[in-house]
Image (tube, rainbow, N blue to C red; front, side, top):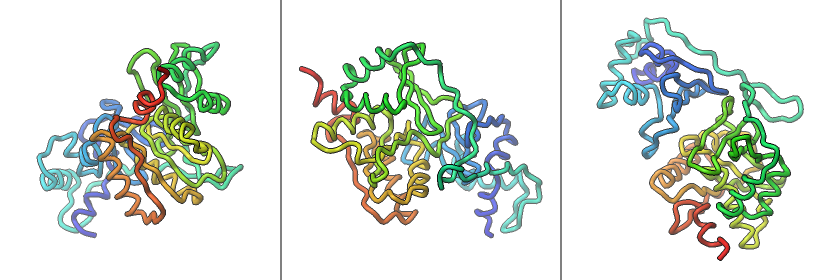
Length: 313
């Protein structure tokens, strides 16, 4: 094992504590009390930061990237020398400092399916309102989501209105919130970021549509309806951001029926960079089936597209 490999085997969780951060368990991962947008994956010993993303290089990566991000080192070599100094790593020799290797979260098989599940805290869902009128109006009239899609999602109990009139989107071990009257968005405590918001409409569906938000997923469904395509012939994955591409890799690894992927991420710099990163990641993982890009040509994202195309005149 070489010098670089010795550096990268140091757990980010241990290094984070040594440089003064406080670890917080967040579902399947760890975060930092001081920076709650940070997610640390102990399985892969990597991190990402939900608040930043520049070509997959800033705010994400290995322990070296973590050191650059939070210690302000100007280059990789300086960061590596600093980490090596803390852990007594010289050349290809192992660390002479005992470090705390957090136990990787245990995987278990569900009793009801063959799916491997990750240990996770229970979702802390906000209290539901007595009806869903404001959410219906917001998604249909303001966001132009087709009523067929809304009825389908409400029937599956994947949307509801909370007591603050927010949209709450609920999937398997994942939920997020969107304000109907402002710009607030957020994930609820206890989310599994491997799962993110995942919907498989039919057991026969073999094409996965990947979007940044749940509203974008429903916008693509609306687009399919308007173009005489069965939206229930697809699976949908809403990453709720661009820094959770590990969820895409997780799902293709756990659902062998997925044969095709449609990347419908935003048509902005972050979305285009994430699309490139996803394609590279899929290639590196040997995904040999069809990967296509579905981006609105002149609009930022699919919800803006359907608002412009299908809003009532």
